[in-house]
Image (cartoon, rainbow over all chains, first blue to last red):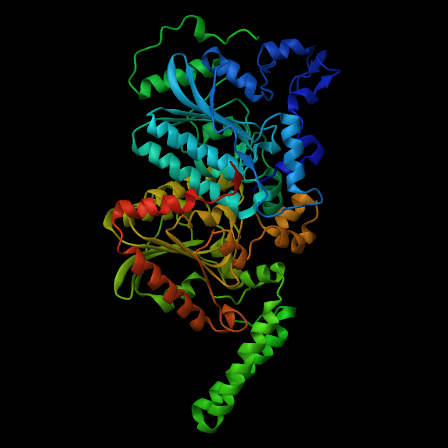
Length: 298
Length: 317
């Protein structure tokens, strides 16, 4: 199910956006249209190619800048750190893998959660950090998502959760599978209080994250061309012994098959989410002035 | 059913076969009864000893043994008055999951279980126990119904995993599994799950959000198959034996990690050597669990289930 380590282990801990640079901060090439532009042009446009609109990976910090009022997140439970319940090793010990992921991502785990505002709307916010072990869901990610929904339920807030994950974290074995049940249990208690959950599916959202809370949003939104699905392409191809069709498991494929509500450009995501929450909570229209367009890069 | 013998099973199978022959003789001639008792005792002891050192990979092979009892083998032994129910009401029927009403010791319950096939033809029909979204949507529909009517839910887990295919993705395999997790989380009735063979990842968990989870001694439960894990970690599926060890997927590991509440002892040589005895073990544990859960109210049952899964995981605070 989880396909993320199919990249070379050395790649995993790198922030993908930095990998494409030809000499740091000079020129970068778009994955899709091959346009070569100053790195600042991508950064200023939140990693959306100014030429073709291709969405490249965006760091958690930049997502905050893009979506949250003043880029401000009052973080919850940032102190939680992974342990190594299975004493797992695959040549490299899991504990070492965690240490190097923490060092390169400068984060303790693959998710951040907290309280924030979007165009004036109070929300409980969570965002996966794909740069941390492929955004895989182990015990800490599961625990923090459960706490996100629990805190949001107690404070009567909507939840907005940005997902980018290869699925369950293999190194925590069966305990990572159990996080699927734990998180969905917390989500259902939030739902019972008639509080909205906006599920935002980024590239990629697969495996155990896809098969738990990701599709259970009151509204599911995806970024253009995001890869979203249950099984990895390699697993499916091996099973059915045929090549997969073009566009398979992409956001547009999911929209066509009725699995998501909307595909939204990253640059419109903030007002999109805020408007949805205002509809669901029957709040009045936000007077969109400054906050309707993405903030300038800072 | 054609007998299939794994290399490491041979000595145990020989013993068990001799016991079986002697048992047949003892039925017609009482003079063999004494010898039968002695041999039964010896075979049990030897089988325990021989199986005590099984590697995790050998246990995985037992959990997938083609002669192992499947869901319907337990259904016919544990329940009466079974009425199967079909279909997801939106796309189709999936024979990889069986579901329906039945009576357990007189009481009506809902049964849901993955069903593997015996032989090529039935395995095509059952898709080797790998459900499509419509199987999960049938399960979800019936979980919701059982909750509405106050029927306890009894599940049997035995799947390599949810099917990875084009149609499965088109029809929302992820959403179908997620919706099962949500429905089980909400259910206001007792839920008891028994892992009778393979517990393959999210496709197994969709039947596993229970108040009590039991596993047979040679059942397994894992986030990924050992073959899949090995091919990801070492790009070599043949290192599955090593991966099986690392994943801590056997019954004693699962108990230690609190993922299961109870390990059910299998008969000498494994459940397939004596399906009736295996069924008695499953039945008695099920009766205990339902007896305890019956004393809880609807809200309490949902809370109990939430608390059970809420505490699973390991982290540094």
